[in-house]
Length: 229
Image (cartoon, rainbow, N blue to C red; front, side, top):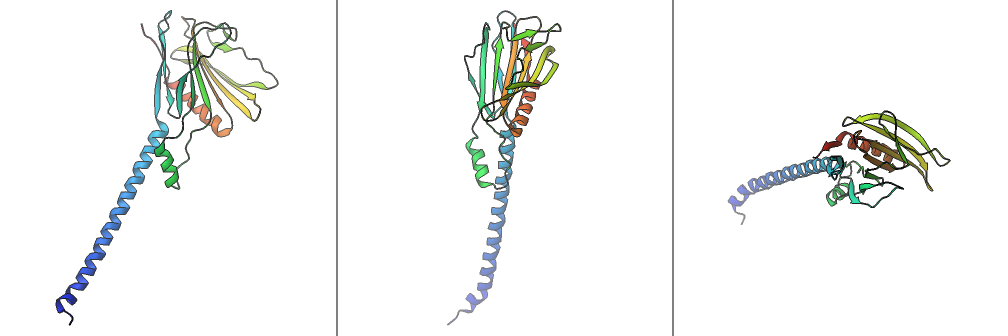
């Protein structure tokens, strides 16, 4: 025999289950939207984060350089040398692999923007004497003596001031074995010292060249040259 009470409560139970199901569905959508929003915030923060590099104090002049570099690069010291040059310090900035959270974003979010990391690299060194490959012009601007050859040519040259000191920005194109390489250079000379702060960046291809140009501009804008003592 069918219980009349069961028949009366059956529609109510079914309606309650449907209501609970809708609530669970809405909650799931809200959680997913929040997750996507957090991923987007993390992605933007990772794409634009930078770290600071603080140089050594030059014992003769008391100057020290500080600047920021994109977190797309990692810093390592190098023992670079030039003929008759005295290096106070030198660094190489190589491409930093994408962190795991960014890899997850690219794997799970089909419309995530591409990671701007690339294979370009940079170098910064501090010269405490002026080698034969450099010269200071009559206005105090540092110049690189790099003659145009069959495999290289100058495509850009600009004088400006960085922290009030004469600086020169150069662009060279060098024919490599497999591709044309762009070399950006930034050179700063505190006029009351024998120091040259030199930055180099090499890249290849339109996307890498544009990214390197932006990064060199960001470094230039972040530079602080201070008297530490």
